[in-house]
Image 1 (spheres, rainbow, N blue to C red):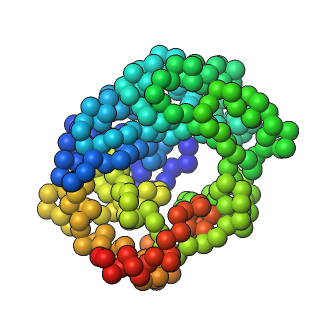
Image 2: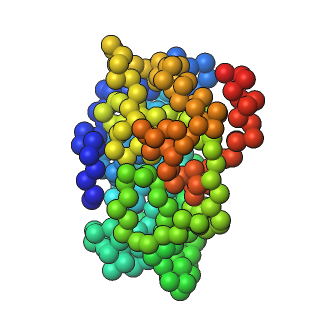
Length: 286
């Protein structure tokens, strides 16, 4: 695993997690989706299923999903997560065979068992939507066909994605990538207004808040100046976030040089929603 400065605080404890879920009552409406992942492998958390169950029992959020590499998805763990009520699971496959998997992830697995475990989840998933993806830049055309053949019948959705530079300061790439190609393989097209800052917030495992969910090295932390541990609603209504949103609406992304926004690969290759033409209208409403 690549060590990144600022990311050494470990998993979120349950007391803090439950406090965050309970504090969502401050919002007028339930949160549409709680995504239990950001950095590292979410299934390493020993209480992951409990976290899913707690959120699903809460009236303050509607759906819970996660993204995992699937290497820890044993039958026992799968049943535990499914029974907890997980609504969606995205599985990132790191290679099409044991050798490629180890070369890409630096981790050895029993590949046949890995596939069998994914099949088990699919056959028992009940309400949970399942999607599988892979980095297409490491595949030959034949291997891409093999990927669809192996996983196509044991998932609800399947996709081959392309490498993009998600975070400018997290740039030690293990493969070559083409900046003109989007995440889904089409032509890249840069947007000026980041749509994500208007409908999502990121809570790190130590309880801190990031302006951006792609803030790998925690360079964009909110709430440091607040006397008490702020609730999500206090952060959402904060002047800092409001000013951040306004900078985008004024098409001032390139002026945010103290942050990493001017060189953000997501806004160029990540196929985000394009709300540039509505910027003035949204600004008038703020």
